[in-house]
Image (cartoon, rainbow, N blue to C red; front, side, top):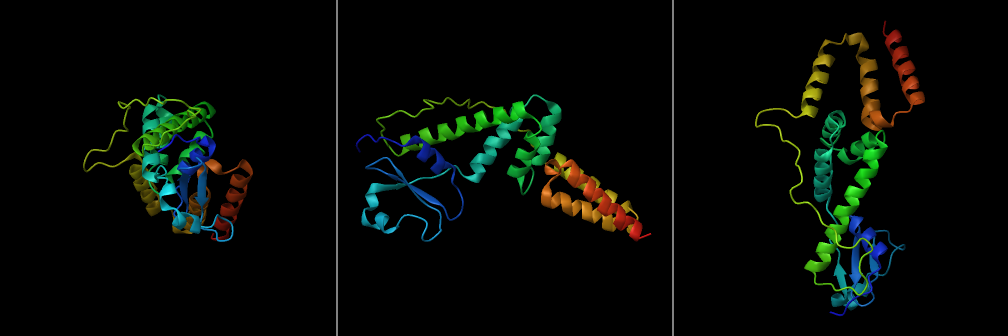
Amino acid sequence: MKPLAIVWNQIEAAFERNAPHASSYLDLETGNIVMFDGNEGQEPDRSVLAADRERYLLIDPASSREQYRWMEQFVASIEDATLQERLIIAIDGKGAFRRFKDVLLRYPEERERWFSYRADRLHAYINDWLAEKDVQTDNPPPWGIVEIDEQEKELPRPLSGSMSPAEVLRRQAKELIDVIPAVDLTAALTFLEFLRDRGTTTMSPEGRESLLRSTDRQSKGNM
Protein backbone atom coordinates (compact mmCIF):
# COMPACT_ATOMS: atom_id res chain seq x y z
CA MET A 1 0.00 0.00 0.00
CA LYS A 2 1.45 3.35 -1.03
CA PRO A 3 1.72 6.15 1.54
CA LEU A 4 -1.37 8.35 1.61
CA ALA A 5 -1.76 12.10 1.94
CA ILE A 6 -4.35 11.88 4.70
CA VAL A 7 -6.85 14.73 5.11
CA TRP A 8 -6.52 14.79 8.89
CA ASN A 9 -9.48 17.01 9.74
CA GLN A 10 -11.71 14.69 7.70
CA ILE A 11 -10.47 11.52 9.33
CA GLU A 12 -10.78 13.08 12.79
CA ALA A 13 -14.43 13.95 12.08
CA ALA A 14 -15.05 10.44 10.75
CA PHE A 15 -13.77 8.81 13.94
CA GLU A 16 -16.21 10.87 16.00
CA ARG A 17 -19.24 9.79 13.97
CA ASN A 18 -20.73 6.78 15.74
CA ALA A 19 -24.42 7.38 14.98
CA PRO A 20 -26.31 4.16 14.05
CA HIS A 21 -26.84 5.03 10.36
CA ALA A 22 -23.56 6.87 9.79
CA SER A 23 -20.54 5.27 8.16
CA SER A 24 -17.26 6.57 6.80
CA TYR A 25 -14.63 5.10 4.48
CA LEU A 26 -10.99 5.98 3.90
CA ASP A 27 -10.15 6.21 0.20
CA LEU A 28 -6.88 4.29 -0.07
CA GLU A 29 -5.97 6.07 -3.29
CA THR A 30 -6.60 9.72 -2.41
CA GLY A 31 -6.55 9.80 1.41
CA ASN A 32 -9.98 11.47 1.41
CA ILE A 33 -12.91 10.37 3.53
CA VAL A 34 -16.23 9.32 2.00
CA MET A 35 -19.08 9.78 4.49
CA PHE A 36 -22.62 8.40 4.54
CA ASP A 37 -25.26 9.51 7.04
CA GLY A 38 -28.36 7.72 5.80
CA ASN A 39 -29.96 10.78 4.19
CA GLU A 40 -30.79 9.77 0.64
CA GLY A 41 -30.09 12.46 -1.92
CA GLN A 42 -27.69 14.24 0.43
CA GLU A 43 -24.75 11.85 0.38
CA PRO A 44 -22.35 10.26 -2.15
CA ASP A 45 -23.53 7.43 -4.38
CA ARG A 46 -22.85 4.14 -2.56
CA SER A 47 -22.27 2.43 -5.88
CA VAL A 48 -18.70 3.77 -5.76
CA LEU A 49 -18.02 1.33 -2.91
CA ALA A 50 -19.34 -1.67 -4.81
CA ALA A 51 -17.38 -0.73 -7.92
CA ASP A 52 -14.02 -0.93 -6.14
CA ARG A 53 -14.35 -2.59 -2.73
CA GLU A 54 -10.62 -2.80 -2.08
CA ARG A 55 -10.16 0.93 -2.53
CA TYR A 56 -12.33 1.92 0.44
CA LEU A 57 -11.58 1.00 4.05
CA LEU A 58 -14.43 1.16 6.55
CA ILE A 59 -13.54 3.35 9.53
CA ASP A 60 -14.25 2.04 13.03
CA PRO A 61 -15.17 5.13 15.08
CA ALA A 62 -14.62 5.29 18.81
CA SER A 63 -17.66 3.51 20.26
CA SER A 64 -19.91 5.00 22.92
CA ARG A 65 -18.54 2.40 25.34
CA GLU A 66 -14.96 3.51 24.61
CA GLN A 67 -15.83 7.18 24.97
CA TYR A 68 -17.65 6.46 28.22
CA ARG A 69 -14.47 4.82 29.50
CA TRP A 70 -12.53 8.01 28.65
CA MET A 71 -15.10 9.97 30.62
CA GLU A 72 -14.77 7.66 33.63
CA GLN A 73 -10.99 7.93 33.59
CA PHE A 74 -11.21 11.71 33.40
CA VAL A 75 -13.55 11.81 36.41
CA ALA A 76 -11.10 9.59 38.31
CA SER A 77 -8.33 12.12 37.59
CA ILE A 78 -10.19 15.07 39.15
CA GLU A 79 -8.74 16.23 42.47
CA ASP A 80 -11.71 18.36 43.56
CA ALA A 81 -13.67 15.86 45.67
CA THR A 82 -16.94 17.78 45.39
CA LEU A 83 -16.78 18.02 41.60
CA GLN A 84 -15.71 14.40 41.31
CA GLU A 85 -18.72 13.27 43.35
CA ARG A 86 -21.07 15.36 41.22
CA LEU A 87 -19.65 13.85 38.04
CA ILE A 88 -19.80 10.29 39.39
CA ILE A 89 -23.51 10.85 39.96
CA ALA A 90 -23.93 12.60 36.60
CA ILE A 91 -22.47 9.75 34.51
CA ASP A 92 -24.65 7.09 36.10
CA GLY A 93 -27.39 5.85 33.77
CA LYS A 94 -29.01 7.03 30.55
CA GLY A 95 -28.08 10.54 29.45
CA ALA A 96 -24.64 10.35 31.08
CA PHE A 97 -22.80 12.27 28.35
CA ARG A 98 -25.24 15.20 28.43
CA ARG A 99 -25.26 15.45 32.23
CA PHE A 100 -21.46 15.22 32.32
CA LYS A 101 -21.16 18.16 29.91
CA ASP A 102 -23.79 20.13 31.84
CA VAL A 103 -21.90 19.80 35.12
CA LEU A 104 -18.61 20.86 33.52
CA LEU A 105 -20.21 24.07 32.21
CA ARG A 106 -19.82 25.44 35.74
CA TYR A 107 -16.15 24.49 35.91
CA PRO A 108 -14.48 26.15 32.87
CA GLU A 109 -10.93 25.08 33.76
CA GLU A 110 -11.87 21.42 34.14
CA ARG A 111 -14.02 21.70 31.02
CA GLU A 112 -11.03 22.85 28.98
CA ARG A 113 -8.94 20.08 30.52
CA TRP A 114 -11.60 17.59 29.45
CA PHE A 115 -11.47 18.82 25.84
CA SER A 116 -7.71 18.31 25.80
CA TYR A 117 -7.96 14.97 27.61
CA ARG A 118 -10.56 13.64 25.17
CA ALA A 119 -8.69 14.93 22.11
CA ASP A 120 -5.55 13.08 23.20
CA ARG A 121 -7.45 9.82 23.52
CA LEU A 122 -9.22 10.26 20.21
CA HIS A 123 -5.94 11.01 18.44
CA ALA A 124 -4.26 8.01 20.05
CA TYR A 125 -7.21 5.88 18.93
CA ILE A 126 -6.82 7.13 15.34
CA ASN A 127 -3.07 6.51 15.34
CA ASP A 128 -3.56 2.97 16.68
CA TRP A 129 -6.24 2.22 14.06
CA LEU A 130 -4.03 3.39 11.19
CA ALA A 131 -1.16 1.26 12.50
CA GLU A 132 -3.44 -1.77 12.92
CA LYS A 133 -4.69 -1.41 9.31
CA ASP A 134 -1.13 -0.86 8.08
CA VAL A 135 -2.03 2.51 6.54
CA GLN A 136 1.13 4.46 5.75
CA THR A 137 0.96 8.25 5.52
CA ASP A 138 3.27 10.70 3.79
CA ASN A 139 2.10 13.60 5.96
CA PRO A 140 2.29 13.11 9.74
CA PRO A 141 -0.79 13.91 11.85
CA PRO A 142 -0.84 17.47 13.24
CA TRP A 143 -1.13 16.04 16.76
CA GLY A 144 1.97 13.88 16.37
CA ILE A 145 2.60 10.78 18.48
CA VAL A 146 0.28 10.67 21.48
CA GLU A 147 1.43 8.91 24.63
CA ILE A 148 -1.37 7.70 26.90
CA ASP A 149 -0.68 6.67 30.48
CA GLU A 150 -1.85 3.07 30.73
CA GLN A 151 -1.73 3.27 34.54
CA GLU A 152 -4.45 5.91 34.82
CA LYS A 153 -6.71 5.94 37.83
CA GLU A 154 -9.98 4.09 37.59
CA LEU A 155 -13.19 5.11 39.31
CA PRO A 156 -13.79 3.09 42.47
CA ARG A 157 -16.58 0.58 41.98
CA PRO A 158 -19.18 -0.08 44.69
CA LEU A 159 -18.56 -3.29 46.59
CA SER A 160 -20.83 -6.18 45.77
CA GLY A 161 -24.17 -5.55 47.47
CA SER A 162 -23.49 -1.83 48.06
CA MET A 163 -25.05 1.08 46.19
CA SER A 164 -23.48 3.73 43.99
CA PRO A 165 -23.86 7.42 45.00
CA ALA A 166 -26.58 7.85 42.37
CA GLU A 167 -28.51 4.84 43.72
CA VAL A 168 -28.31 6.28 47.23
CA LEU A 169 -29.76 9.59 46.01
CA ARG A 170 -32.54 7.83 44.11
CA ARG A 171 -33.48 5.89 47.23
CA GLN A 172 -33.54 9.09 49.27
CA ALA A 173 -35.76 10.74 46.64
CA LYS A 174 -38.19 7.80 46.74
CA GLU A 175 -38.29 7.97 50.54
CA LEU A 176 -39.14 11.68 50.36
CA ILE A 177 -41.94 11.00 47.88
CA ASP A 178 -43.43 8.52 50.34
CA VAL A 179 -43.71 11.16 53.09
CA ILE A 180 -44.80 14.18 51.00
CA PRO A 181 -48.47 15.02 51.64
CA ALA A 182 -50.67 13.85 48.76
CA VAL A 183 -51.85 17.41 48.18
CA ASP A 184 -48.27 18.41 47.22
CA LEU A 185 -47.51 15.47 44.95
CA THR A 186 -48.72 17.19 41.77
CA ALA A 187 -46.27 20.05 42.30
CA ALA A 188 -43.47 17.62 43.16
CA LEU A 189 -44.11 15.53 40.05
CA THR A 190 -44.17 18.64 37.85
CA PHE A 191 -40.78 19.64 39.20
CA LEU A 192 -39.32 16.16 38.75
CA GLU A 193 -40.62 15.92 35.19
CA PHE A 194 -39.01 19.27 34.41
CA LEU A 195 -35.67 18.05 35.75
CA ARG A 196 -35.99 14.84 33.74
CA ASP A 197 -36.59 16.74 30.51
CA ARG A 198 -34.21 19.64 30.98
CA GLY A 199 -31.58 18.70 33.57
CA THR A 200 -30.89 20.79 36.65
CA THR A 201 -27.67 22.33 35.33
CA THR A 202 -29.31 23.71 32.20
CA MET A 203 -32.13 25.46 34.03
CA SER A 204 -31.87 29.24 33.72
CA PRO A 205 -32.79 31.51 36.68
CA GLU A 206 -35.84 32.68 34.70
CA GLY A 207 -36.90 29.11 33.99
CA ARG A 208 -36.46 28.17 37.64
CA GLU A 209 -38.64 31.10 38.78
CA SER A 210 -41.32 30.21 36.21
CA LEU A 211 -41.34 26.59 37.37
CA LEU A 212 -41.59 27.60 41.02
CA ARG A 213 -44.53 29.91 40.26
CA SER A 214 -46.24 27.10 38.35
CA THR A 215 -45.78 24.52 41.10
CA ASP A 216 -46.85 27.07 43.74
CA ARG A 217 -50.09 27.73 41.84
CA GLN A 218 -50.75 24.01 41.56
CA SER A 219 -50.08 23.53 45.25
CA LYS A 220 -52.46 26.36 46.22
CA GLY A 221 -55.08 25.05 43.84
CA ASN A 222 -55.08 21.73 45.68
CA MET A 223 -55.68 23.29 49.09
